Amino acid sequence: MRKPELLAPAGNLDKLKIAFLYGADAVYIGGEEYSLRVAADNFTMDEIRQGVEFAHERGKKVYLTANIIPHNEDLKDFRDYLSEAVKTGIDAVIISDLGLFSIAKETCPDLEIHISTQANNVNFESAKMWHKLGAKRVILAREMSFKEIAEIRENTPDDLELEAFVHGAMCISYSGRCLLSNYMTNRDSNLGACSHPCRWNYYLMEEQREGQYMPVFENERGTFIYNSKDLCMIEHIDELIKSGLDSFKIEGRVKTEYYLATVVKAYRDAIDSYFENPDGFEFKQEWLDELLKVSHRGYTTGFYYKKPDGNEQNYETSSYIRNYELSGIVCGYDKEKKLLSVVQKNRFFKGGEVEFLCPDRPFIKHKIEYMTDNEGNELTVANRPQQIVHIRFDHELPENSIMRQVKN
Image 1: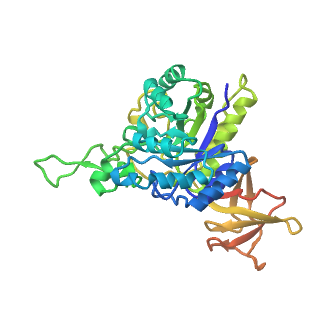
Image 2 (image 1 turned 180 degrees about the vertical axis):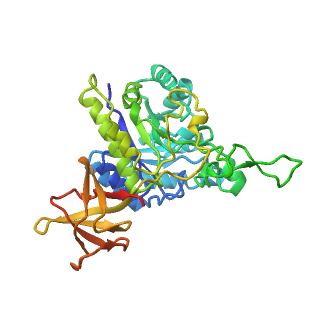
Image 3 (image 1 turned 30 degrees about the vertical axis):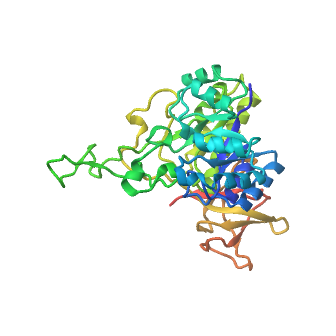
């Protein structure tokens, strides 16, 4: 049994580093063009080069997304763009369109190509054809069940890798191919500019009663009829491993560093725990508890077991559940003074209770008894974003450990 790759999103260079430090085997990133997440910071060519160098020094991989559904005008610069990207050392490019696939094979014949979920990969004949054309990996559509994944694995070559999403936001449209945003706001989701109208509040209006809005569901605020809960498969990590998938994908290139660190670490710990003792593997509630501490819309298993019903939708609100927030990121430690240095992200107080999430150990609870600014002035509140705060702490923690607190 092959140990599956843990694949994490990286919206910028800092997030790329966090993903690897907390256990990702590979990341997928977007350049300044051809990516389906224009809301992410995304990477310049120089930043891609830096990210690849950081990854390869640690034996990790970087995949570049170029998975838009292109129009004619989008084709003209793709050869030059991809040629430049290959020079940075990227390990693969993620593509959904046959035209871009053809250009990539012609321009960079040695570059691995992964077929995006946007290509609607839901059967083994499609997967086999992409493999014959030269694809190394097929990313399955979110609409796949365990049974269908097993059938695809049984009917495709062993050297064709299969990848699937295991955590993150779900789209209301088939494999993410949605026209609702384009129609309502002139922002094309297939070019990375989705305005997420599936999260909006909707009412029903009968054609002869213009202006009379009736709730679709009995709720005075209306109803969020398209608003899916988030995918979460941490409780079924053993079945995922046995399914034959080669890569477990986490969604969220526009999510925070805190979200990324927490989710990646939970799945890393779960995967590693399984391979330490496959026969005696037991799910640990602490993994799910960690995922409940990040921003989410409630959790669902999506299509893995059955087609989603009304229980997979959140009809009451499109807001996220946010019980915890990022307070700071550890950037150093003074062993003589026993002071932990933290870059402040959200305000925190002397006397406040915080938790430290570290890459290499369980989280640590701590009550802040003493803290100073860079000049040594004692603080009762840290409320200046990006300031360095020094907190009395008995022992050193790794840099890039995450300090979080319950959200008020």
